[in-house]
Length: 296
Ligand SMILES: Nc1ncnc2c1ncn2[C@@H]1O[C@H](COP(=O)(O)OP(=O)(O)OP(=O)(O)O)[C@@H](O)[C@H]1O
Image 1 (spheres, rainbow, N blue to C red):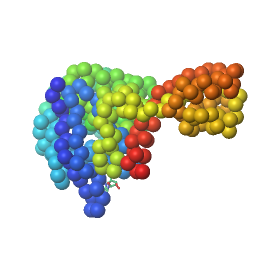
Image 2 (cartoon, protein in one colour):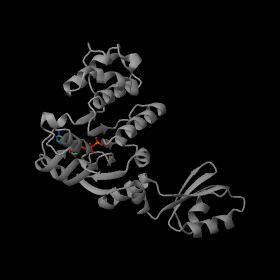
Image 3 (cartoon, protein in one colour):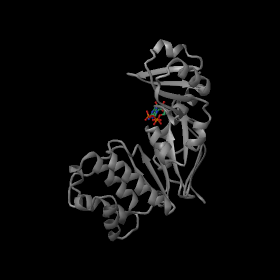
Image 4 (cartoon, rainbow, N blue to C red):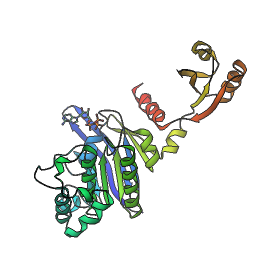
C-alpha cells in the first residue's frame, strides 16, 4: 500500500518555542493514524503543515506525493477542523455542491454525500442554523465530496452524541476501505485505541511512540485488579504488590505489576470478595507513562 501522507524530519519553531522537532509521520492508503499528545505537544502545528497552512522550516511534507501548499495537491485533502465559520447566507446543499465544483467534481456529487451523512433533509437549511453536531457533519460532507486521498480530522467527535460518533467512524471505515488514509487528532484516547491502526504520541514537539494501540499498551506491565470487597483502603494499600488503590464505594481498583500475588493475598484477606476481574493497561495509562518518562 502506498503512503498518502509522508512527513520527514520536520522542524518548526515559533520564536524561541520549538513546536516540532524532527517529526516523521506516515499514513498509508486505507490506514487510520491517531495523533495524541498533551496540550502544547505540537499537534495543531503538525496538522497545519499537513494541510498546507504552514510551511515547514525544515524537512518535507508530502500529501499523495505532492506539496500541500500547492492548490492541486490540497484538492487531494479533506479537512475537518474543530470549528469553522460558515457564510450566513449559504445553505447546506449549496455548500456541499460548491465544495464539489471547487474540487473539479460535478454538482451531482453532492447528493450521495448528503445522504451518506444524514444531511439530505437539511440541504435547504442555512448552515449557520445547524446544531454543532450537524455543522460537524456538514464539514465532513464538504471534505468527502471530492473523494480525498487523505482526510485530516481535528477532534472530529467533539460535541457529537454517541450515535453520531458511531456513524462518523462507520463513514470513515467505508472511505478507508476505498483507499483513503485518515489522520485524526483526538483527546479521546480510548476512542483512538478502538479506531486507529496506529497511534502516534507527540510530546513537546517530538514523536515519543508510533505503534498499534495493542503494542503500545503491551509495553506497560501494569494490570488492574477490580473487585467488590469490604476491605478498607488502608488494608488494601498494605497488600504486597498494590501500586495504587482507587475505590468507589465497595468497588475497588488496584494497580499492580504482580497480579497473581496480589490476587492470592486479596482472596486470603477477604473470602467474600466478588465481581473479580483483571484488566490489562489502557492506552491512556500507556500514554501517560510515556509522557511522564520524558518529563522525569
Ligand atoms: N502562533 C504561535 N505563536 C507562538 N507559539 C505558538 C503558536 N502556536 C503554537 N505555539 C506554541 O507551540 C507549541 C505547540 O503548540 P500546538 O498548538 O501545535 O500544540 P497542540 O498539541 O495542538 O496543543 P493543544 O492540545 O493544547 O491544542 C506550544 O508550546 C504553543 O504554545
